[in-house]
Image (cartoon, rainbow, N blue to C red; front, side, top):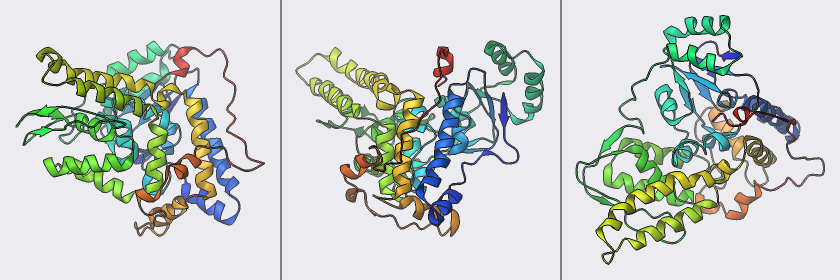
Length: 400
């Protein structure tokens, strides 16, 4: 099965403006039915036995990601633009995003999910969202060979794709490119429930922007993430950090908090405590050898302990069931009606000036956030019921 879009987009997402209109004119269950069908389709794609080849030549956002990233082969080109912009709409990264974003390296998934950062084809390949990069000029020949060849075996598809694939060059401001530090920085020690990193960067030393993302987006709360970014910007004046700060400040406070909880997990606490213990051991009383390996161990634990985050522990079906609960609460608007306001400001009136309520992060309590993850208090409501998929090979259950 080969899927591609026509025109300048693969798929720019679902028609959420129509969903809001239907809810306004009728009942929130009309919107819930739309998302139930969409999430069920996402699950069927994620667990499909046959190989799905998605050619993402153009815009891939929101629902477009759900219709492609769960497949086995994900082809990007020089024209690909990917984003999950839901926090700017008063929603959250859905369509199984808590599954595929939580599987990106380090805390890159939190960065992409919270800020709505746009990624191009080379960056999607670098972080694992894409499997192959093919220049758009080669797509007609690629599609012809896929249609004519024996593609019952995924290995045959791999051989065909490898013939046309190439290694792209990352753009200069990519998170996967190095940036030069202009002054000394010691991130210091942050103890307790917060992540602790003790790394001294020398003047002129080149580091990956990805490491800075990990440092800032590893915190347990959106407030701490924003504070870390502002500190980073004060020390470096990097444009991409400023852009991340701007995106977070424009987004719905409620959406940011429920998105972080969805993509992240309570195991951040355990991660922070472990990293804090490591840094505390790095004192003058200990050997130089121990000090030298402390930074390595911190990053080792950061990257590999993350597999125990909630999203990584849960399969794609569990993630979609949780997201369905969340979206039903969003549609009911009991805690916040930011989704309706975001659609008005961004998609309908297009004044790009949403009035969020609550308007600030500190006004969104933990109880308010937890409400989105609870069962809906409605006698007619049911959790998402996904089709039974028995005797599936491992390759059908773990494509990312």
